[in-house]
Length: 190
Image (tube, rainbow, N blue to C red; front, side, top):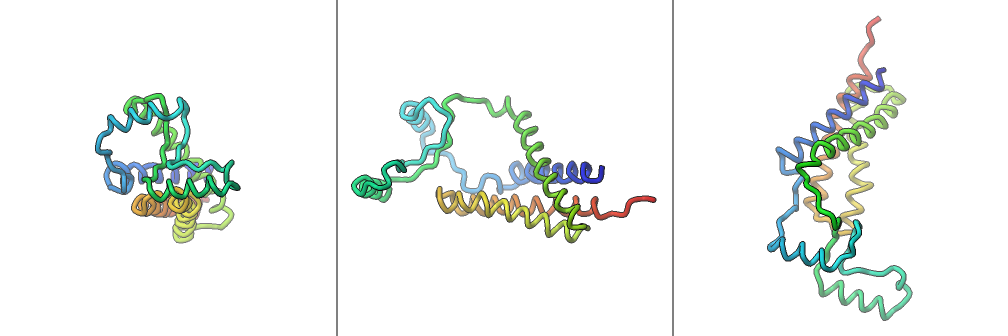
C-alpha cells in the first residue's frame, strides 16, 4: 500500500507540475512559434506528404544510398543550401479541445507509471525527503539526457526548447521525488 500511495502521490505531483509548466509558465512553449502563413504550409503538407501518420525530415536523406558518393554529395549540397524541418505529420485533423480530457488522462497515466518505477527504486534505496529529492532529480535529468538531448543533437531541436524540457523534467521529478520520499520515509504508526 505504501508503494501504491507513493506512486499516486508522485504521479499527481508530476502531473500538476506539468500542467503548471505548460499552462501558466512559458516552459512548455519555449521556441514554439507561429508560421508566417499557416494556410500555405498546411496546404503544402497536405499536397506533398503521403497520407500517412509519420515523421518527415527535410531535406530527406535516404539511408539506403549511404554508400553512394554521388548521392551523398547531392544530399550535402541540399542540406547546406536549404532550411531544415522535423515534421510530425498526421494527415487527419483532430480537435485538441475535444480530445483534451483523454490527453490529460494519458498524461496522468504516463506520469503515474513513471512514478511507479521511481517508487520501486526508492523503496530499495531506503528513502526520506532528501534522498527522494536526489533520486527524483536524477530521474528528471536522466529523462532529459536520454530523450531531449539526442533530439537536440540529431534533429536540431532548438536550444531553448531543450532547456525548457530540462526545467520541466528535472524540477518536476525533484518535487515528485520529495513527495514520494516523504511518504515512503515516514514512520508508520504502531
